[in-house]
Every structure is written in C-alpha cells, then in structure tokens.
Image 1: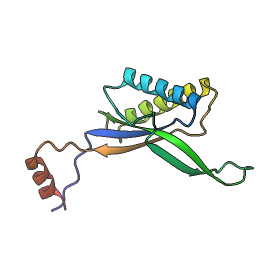
Image 2: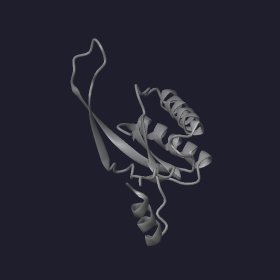
Image 3: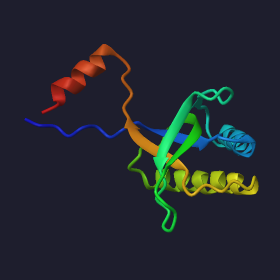
Length: 137
C-alpha cells in the first residue's frame, strides 16, 4: 500500500547576494534590510570578512568565456508558503525585482540574482518521523 507524501509545510529559500566590492556590499545590506521588513527572520553569512565565494563561467554572447569570481553573502529564509503554492512565486519574483533594483541603484547591475527554493517538512518529534516512514512506499 503506497501513500503520497504530505504537502510541504514551508519553503526554504537561499539567496546569493554578491558582495565583491563596496557598492555591492551597500546593495546587499539594503537587500537584507528589505528582508527584515518583509519576513519574520533569516540566517545570513558574514559579509566582512566574507565567508563564501562563487565561481561562474561567463556566458554572455560576444565576450570570451572565462571564469568569474565573486564574494557571496548567503541568506537563508524560511517562508510559511509551500513551494508549490502560486503565492510563493509571486513573493519570490517581487523580492528578486526589488533586490535587483537595489543593485541597479548602486550602479552594479546584476545579470542574475540566484535564488533557490526547496520544500521544507517540519519534523516535530520522533513519532512524526516514525509515522512518515511507516506511510512511505
């Protein structure tokens, strides 16, 4: 007897904010201030000194392919809207547009701001884990 998985409770969002120079640092801090106004909490890596670095292949047409290096501020936000809820896409799109505008305002436009999302299931007790395992195929 197989059971379908229960719907996710929350969505965990990871936001990669570039902080490779002074202007990007200002924009990232403004992005964090924006988050503090629109969500109930978040986890953030250090920005000074930075903790994460990213390496990406430049894929712009007309520019030779090369590796790009960025210093990154990693932000994790838990949102109480499931990833498969249409409201989630609206929330994320709105934040991405507003965050991009903050980088634009500092004259450091970003080709992309990476935002990823994953479903989150709350595990409140050993009994809930055992129950979930018992229902899995």
